[in-house]
Amino acid sequence: MVTVLVLVILTGFSGLLGATAVQRLVTDLTATHTSVSAQVIGEDTERVMEGNSRNRHWTEYRTVTVTYPTADGAQRAVVRSDDAPVGASVAAWVHDETGDVRLDQPTAPDLWQWLWAIVFVLATIAFAWGLLVIVRNAVVSTETRSRAEAEN
Image (cartoon, rainbow, N blue to C red; front, side, top):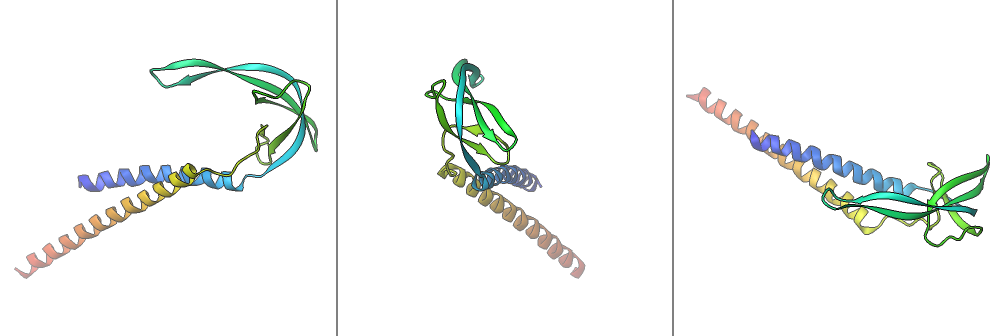
């Protein structure tokens, strides 16, 4: 009974992680971006708390405000950038679904995204198979015992 409970928990947990990894991978694979010419109109800094529970620290990042043309008129966005000078015209990529803007060209999913998706899906299948085998064996064992008792 404990083994069944542990396998149910492991199957559920790995299934959740696998579904999340696959969803992120599919989102990255199907994402479309539109390249636009943007004008850098200002700069600022952004302070972000980074680290873990034992080693937290503030980190400052340079951000720039860019304007870029859309079908609805000019839009503004604040983007992290270490090297875009104010007043320059830069290439920007706008995510077609979310409208997020980035100055670096979007890349395909890396090896780790593929690996995590595959590993968690395979782990979920393995845990589910193990759960199925244990439950089936328990049912067969119970039926065999019942038949043996009925014959006596």
